[in-house]
Image 1 (spheres, helix red, strand yellow):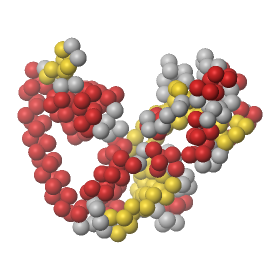
Image 2: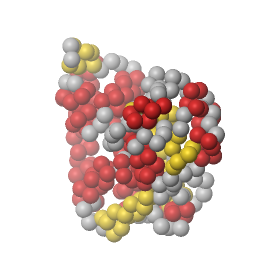
Image 3: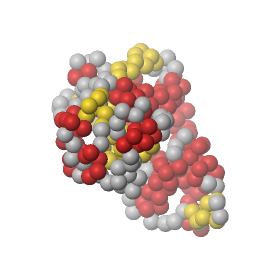
Image 4: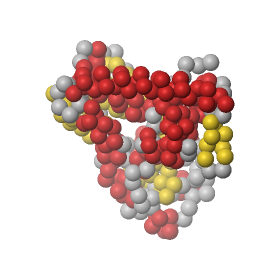
Amino acid sequence: MNKPDWTHIRAFLATADAGTLSAAARQLNLTQPTLSRQVSALEESLGVMLFERLGRRLALTDAGRELLPHGRKMLEGADGLCLAASAQAQSIEGTIRITASDMMSAFVLPPVLQILRQQAPRLSIDIVAANDIRDLMRREADIAIRHVRPDQPELITRLVQEATAHFYAAPSYLARRGQPGSLAALSSHEFVNFGDIQRSIEFLAPLGVHLTPDNFRIGSNSGLAAWELVRQGFGIGAMADDVVEHSSGVERLLTDQPPIRFPVWLTTHRELHSSRRIRLVYDLLAEFFAAK
């Protein structure tokens, strides 16, 4: 039996209390599919079924009822730990600089930044919306969130999420060019360039999407500007699903295709071991992405 993840135990407790996945997901500020995966992961690690479906509600199995009080004791202990840590966090002050892409900065980070403000109200937060890891190397940021793992030995790096993406387009574009019926059919469509055409071509080729620079007639090195071009019907864009959850005006293409998967790396300096300020934010970001 694998050691259970606390995030999965918390999902189990919330689902047991709420009686439905949708209500528990709202309570934990998660999407329903994410919560369902966490509960399933706990069942797999424990080797038991925790719930059975009764109509629209979920009922605890015998195993679930037996494990519930143990889970509640863990929750009480965690609450006590958080209260003690909260007292420590309240005294943390100074400035923390987090660098992430402009898309992640605008669409993904705000919820965790709200939590950070509550836990450390005396801490100032500066978001460096950029795509260059050298921001971290030049000490222009304390923590970097990137999709490519840096290889500098003086940095501490942790894989915190395997994110997913799909192809999206605006209804106006689809009305003009039609729905692509397959990955191969995408080669005849227009794409919006997000700053590096050759890198996009090389990334999509193994997926069976064979593009040339002629597919990219418009774009921007600003992710926000490029995404707006997609929303305005200029072409197709591959975008992270957690970004689209907070956006609008686009449709997912090729819904029967598996998602594009890519890593999310959390990186900081070795100062992590000696700075309470960096440790607090680093751990909070790691928990946030692991729960998604």
